[in-house]
Length: 243
Image (cartoon, helix red, strand yellow):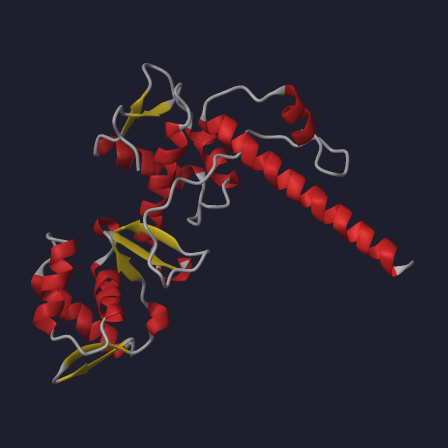
């Protein structure tokens, strides 16, 4: 096979990939606008390149991200600072500082983000972090020993790779995703449908299964962000609520 033929086949394949990516993006825009897919787009999306039909609902596009810190990478996720655990906030505070920070100031900064945290518990966090060698504690204060273990606080959000987030924080990420998905369906969705939608979204980085989503919906119901739709099994976002 000649070099020209190889190059031509490579360009053709790349063109097809770009076309399918644009088709998926177009599909997401129609879904967000709550418009029916036009027939040409349906026909294009009905084939996956091997002749097999693509099944399942359209993929919901990712929500618009808040302002990202300059250090953030494309695969980083975020949660609201108020949904983080005190340990994560303390590490993020240390991450930003080039100098050791005294315990008193750490306490003040953590409670500024999480007002309900007991001051004594933050001192206990310091002991645990020092024992696990994630921070250094000296007479000058606390300093971060392993930068890869800490996220970044930026404009009210905690950013970082998925690996730094704990289970409760990933649950917060999933609940935000549930709210975003429900915002795209005026008539609401059943729990199994929400699970299906979340499972198809590459931007959802938390574990997803029926039990977890059911617990999330009960939590969101308790805090007044979602509700049952009439007497149906469907859930809907309460008007005025979003992530």
